[in-house]
Each structure stands twice: as structure tokens, then as C-alpha cells.
Amino acid sequence: MENLLTRYRNVSLLVALLFAQVLGLAIQVRRSPRAESSRLIRVWAVAAVTPLEKTIVWAQSSTSRTWRNYVYLRGVRQENRDLRYEIENLRLQQVRLTEDATQARRLQALLGFKEQFIKKTLAAQVIGSTGSVQSRGVYIDKGSEDGVKKDMPVITADGVVGRILQVYDNTAFVLLINDQTSGVGAIVEKSRLQGILQGTPTGAVVLQKVLADEQVQPGDVVLTSGGDQVFPKGLPAGVVTSVSAGPDSTLNIRVRPSADLSKLEEVLVITQEETKVPEVSADSAVRAADILARRLPSVPDNAAATGAATATGIPLPVANQPAPAQSAPATVVYPARAPDAGSRTPAGDAVRKSADPPMPSAQHAPASVKPAVASKPISHTVNVSDQSEAPPRAAHKAPVHKTQPPSQPTPDQDKPQ
Amino acid sequence: MPITYTSGEQVEVYRFSLPVAVLVPLVAIFLQAFLPLRFPFFSIFDLPLLVTIFFAVARRNPVAGMATGALIGLMQDSLTHQPIGIYGIAKTVVGYGASSLGVKLDVENVGARFLVTLVFYAVHEVVYFAVARGLVGLTLAWSWQHEVGSAFGNALLALPLFFLLDRFKQRT
Image (cartoon, rainbow over all chains, first blue to last red; front, side, top):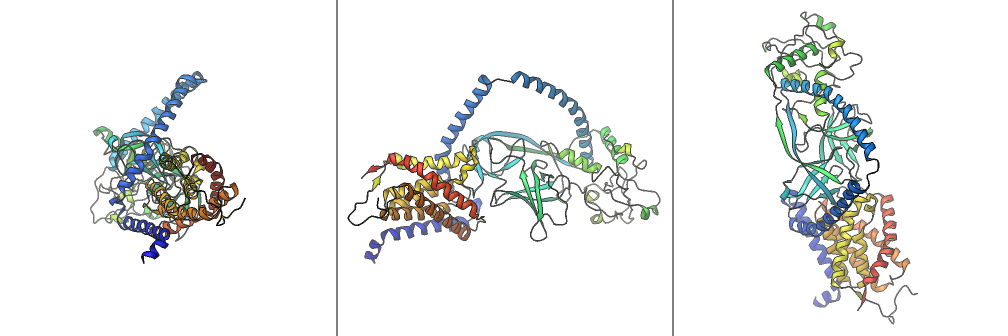
């Protein structure tokens, strides 16, 4: 036996080395990823590689900054003039948007929305990658000493990048959204369809769990839905590039990430979020209710008119009147959608406005309530006594009230207030 | 120039100083992690694998070859978020194979180096995919186009890299 081992020493060593590694792999696979059984080895490896990466990135950015700020100033005056002009335009735009935002906030308060604000972010420099196409992630130059924690979202100005997976003292590993093990709760901005944004082995990003009978078009914007409890709602995630039939009656939706994941240099780690209900003063609440009453559908006095009405719009039956008795079902009629209105609804607009800018983003308080149902067909009548039959908003939080508008909506009333 | 050695010929075995033996693999792993950020096309190359092949072939010692391969592979694994050992196993096999081949073949000329790198890149990928899929259960996409392109890319890169690393060789 001894002779045999001596004779086949090299092969024996190879088998022993492979066996040891296979055993190590088996232990790691068997334990949960949270256990981090191989953390010590990873810490050593990261400590060996990242200081050099940090030094080079620092030297590179310092040189680049010095060059840009003190040497290469060609065209700066012209750029300054252009920027001043742009500021003027943006100021004008801001006036209009502030008005819209105020109104949206009032509506959100009325509907019991909770807003999720990004309170604090931490800028970090990308210093390295994994060096493997099978593991799509990057290392940043901020770690636990800077307040970075596991599962914090990482974004750029363009959109979501990934989440913190491993934290070390001065560095952290960010798992990118195009890795096959990552998943982001996402929603299609236009159709409000929800799905899961996942990476593929080739590094592409797909939106999964969307049924084949839904309408998704190339060019549709995909936002975070907030359902994953990691990313705040409303951050841009990507744009649909192609839609085809997938397996199990689902769609195969390819998405181009909003952030350029192959050329990341600086990112923002969202270190603190804040959830709060917008504060609305008493008079503004009344005004918001008035706005709702004017813009939302009407309930005809005559129940017989119900059958004659066509219902294609999806406004929400919320108003400032007390709810009728549970035993008395009320019939709500939805007016026909205006030709130019498309699938947009006032309430849907409110949601969209809150979701459009990356910060702050709106989050619906109860998870069961869908953010919007603009493209969903809806029944003509709603039985108030049975809330499960009602449209999602009607079942939301506050008791369902019978709508009592002053008059039928007119085209003028559809304009923003 | 003969490709295989006869019993009368002496096989040249090289050794490397400790700083070179430590720093070259470290620099290779560092560049592999750093360069794809600036040049995304660089991800098709596998510098740690090339360094493994070079050291294994030059030392012509299977034990040293597999140990170098295992250490480089494990270090490469440590930078990913996947279980440690997938690259380790693949590079152990490559290190053993390359050093065993180096004992029998002349791998000093350009043509032989190109072919050896091409073959061992393929071996590395096959072992990696087998371990990742079979043992760890990862879902990986095998693309012939990508693998063939990467194999040739790495074989071409190996030529100037090996020429550069030849300067650190020391005769035993």
C-alpha cells in the first residue's frame, strides 16, 4: 500500500486536493448563504486585492480631477452660459411641477398613502469587479466603518444598480441586478404590471412572471415596485427592449438596465429611508376632497341609469361622504373614458407623479393594494357590501364611500388643478 | 527543434523567486478584477489561468503545479459571491495537467504554447461548468461561440504574457 502511494504520489495528492475542495464546496452549499462559512477566506482575499485597487482608483480620479478642474477648461464659459439658460427653463418647469407635487401629496394623504423617502445616501467609488462573468458584482470603497450594511440598495442617477451582499471593514460587495441570483420587484410604468427583474446567465436582464395575455411593448419603462423590501418604489430600473412568448404562458421580456452596469464608476448606497404619511392641513384636505369629487366618477341618482352606462374608465369611488350601510349595496357607474385620456386616470396620475422622480418615491401602505389599475378591465358595478369585489382602491383602508360629484366630469375638469 | 523529449535529453526545470511566485499570481488576480471595469471586453480573458499554466509548465512539477492552481483558483473564488472551490478545482486540474505535460513535451516554443493554452482553457471551462452545474447547482449558459472565442483570445494573449514572464525564470 505504501509502495502504491509512493508510486502514485502525484495522482494521490491530486485526488486528495480535489476531494478536500469538493468537501468544502458541499459544506458551503449545504449551509445557508447567510451562514457565511467561508467569510474568513473572503476577507483575506479582499484585503489582499482591494488596497491596490483603491490606490489606483484614487490616483486615477485625482489626476482626472486635476486635469478637468485646473488644466482642461476649454469651453467652460460657453457651458456656463448654456447651464444658466437651462436653469431658467428648469425654474419655470419647477413652478408647474411643484404645484403638481403638492396636489399629488394631498391626494396621497387622502388615500392613505405612505411615502418612502430616500433620506440618506452615501457616495461610493467602484474599485473592482469579481473578474468572473459567472458572478456579476462590483466592489465599492465603502464598508461597515462607513455605515454600509447588508441588503442596502445601490443606485446611480440613472437607476438601480444592485444591492449590498457582503460587507467588509472598508469595502463592500454589490450584487448587480444582471446577476442570475439577484431579483428586483419591478413594475411596468405604463401598464402597471408587476414582475420580477432577474439576471440571466448571459448577463441580460429579463422581467419574469408576467402572463402572456398582458400588454407590454418595447420602450416601456420599468420601475422598482418596492415589493422586494430592498429597493424603494419608483426608481428607474430599465427599459423594455423586446417581448416574446416565454415558457408556461408567460412573456419573455428583455430589459435594458437604466444604469450602465458595464461602466460603473460612482454609485450611491441608500443608507437610510424614511416612511411617512404626507402631512396635510385641514383646509388642504378639504380642497383635495373637492378635487377628487370633481375629477372622480359620478353616481347617478337613478339606479336604472346603471345598465345603460358604458364603463371603460377606471376612476376610484372615493369621496367625502359616509359609507352606506353594509347591507345596502350601492351601484357605482364609471363614465366612459375620454378619447384622449388613454388609460390614465386621475388617481393613476397621482401615483405616477409620485413615482416619476427617483427621490422621493411613493409606497402604498397595504401590500395587497395594487398601485394602479389603469389598464385593467373593471366591472360596471361595485357592490359596496362585498369589498373583495370592489376595485383595488375601493377596498383600500378607508371605508368605501358613495361618490357624490357635483356634476358629470367635463373635459375642463380633467386638467390638472 | 524536437517537440518531445527522449531519455537522453535533459528536461530543463525552472524555479522562481518567492516575490515573483507570490506577486505574479496576485497581480494577475488584481488585473482580472480591475481591468473589466475599464475595458469590459477584457472579461473574456482569464489571466489567473494563464499564470497557472505558465508556472506549471515552467516548474514541471505536478505537485507544485496543482498547488499553484489550487491557491490561485481559491483566491479567484473568494472574490466572487459563489461557493469557494469551483475555480479551485478547475485550476487544480489544469495545474496538474500542464505540469505533467511539461515534463513530456517541449512547451517553450510559440506554437506549443498556443496549443497548450488553447487545450487547457477548454479543460478549465469543462471542469468549471461540470462542477458549477453538477455539484453546486448553478445555472450557467454554455455558448460555443463565446468559449471558442475566449479560448483563442487567451491563447493569443498567452504568447506575449509568457514571453514577459520568461524573464523571471531561474535555472535550477
